[in-house]
Amino acid sequence: MSLKEYQRKRKFEITPEPKGEIKKISKNRFVIHKHQARHLHYDFRLEMDGVLKSWAVPKGLPEIFGVKRLAVQVEDHPVDYINFQGLIPVGQYGAGKVEIFDQGKYKLIEGDKNKIIFELEGKKIKGKYALIQMKQSKNWLIYKMKN
Ligand code: MN
Image 1 (tube, rainbow, N blue to C red):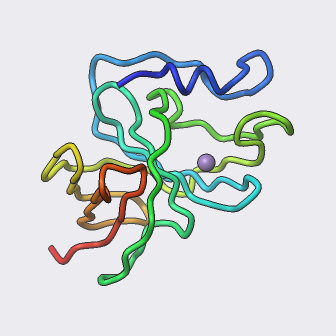
Image 2: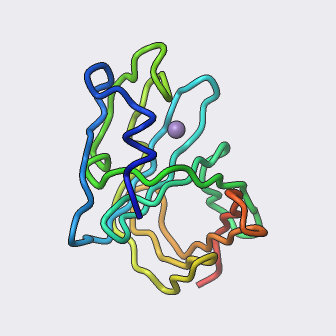
């Protein structure tokens, strides 16, 4: 894990986003940001390995069984991003409004390089989910599992 890509993409004298650092401990939290950028999408972030592993989910996490949604992996974000909300200025990377859609804790059930199964305990989003990487690409699928 590394925050190099995250930090390279941003000008911290302009954006209100945290510069951040890699943390030694993980509290098993997650956040879903609603990000009104050029296209509205949701950013799903899992606190893992000292960073927030992050995926852009165009349509948000499915709340019913049998629906598979695309989740595009993006650069690791700093753990300090977990409470971030604000306006990324015009001209900056990810320009637009960022709000917290939901947050809470998760329980890791299976953590593999290309397959992560976890249970979310958020206020809105709850239950067991799978994230499966497709052909070593940035594209993953996320779906809700029966418990
Ligand atoms: Mn985003």
